Image 1: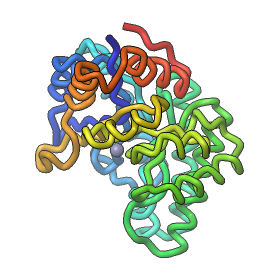
Image 2: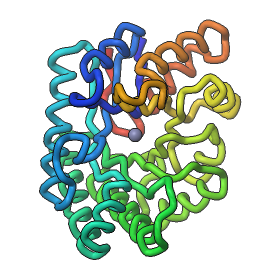
Image 3: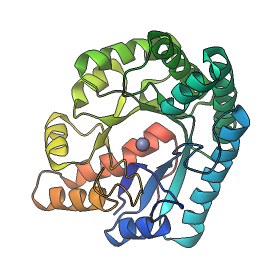
Length: 281
Ligand SMILES: [Zn+2]
């Protein structure tokens, strides 16, 4: 059985790194989408495009290490986290920050085109309050990331403030404006609004809490599951642990909330469609 966690971080400095991946595997997890953290997390200052590029290369190496040293199949997602843009704009000004982040996103696109990454992410807008002009610029950069993904025919993983139906509709407008295929736009940390997401043309990646997944599956199986595991020993329990997606999936299958078909759709067909990758055991 294939079990896919769609949003997982690793941190070789502050976290368990390969041990977290092994925990996922011991719980019967098989496939991981490993998402870039921040340049700062990886030991780079995050003050110019080159810093982000080096951090993305470092991230790709971490993913290669997982593939070489564990039985788990890992895929890389690279981008510039919205918080990195906010920080850079505060340090060096909006224009400078916008330019550097655009260059870095173009590099992320190149890594997708070279087959080293499967998506650009997490990009988007901050989940906390920022000045109006930074907010607007974040949306422009999110759209730019979508344009790059459209050109490369790869996916994007979006990070945003907490979401509701109205925000999904707003995002749907950007998706239409950019013209990117709806199944290529993944809303990371999505609430269980499966039907709304489908209607507006966004693919939900839902936090795998029992409550969320129970609600999601009532609406259909067009979604993926994620932990957003952050791999930080200083913040245990800040998010779901590495075993959550396999544990939840098996429990839901056992108690009949998922059918075999649901599991196959969520963990194999949906990832295949979104990322255009072959998903094999
Ligand atoms: Zn994340």
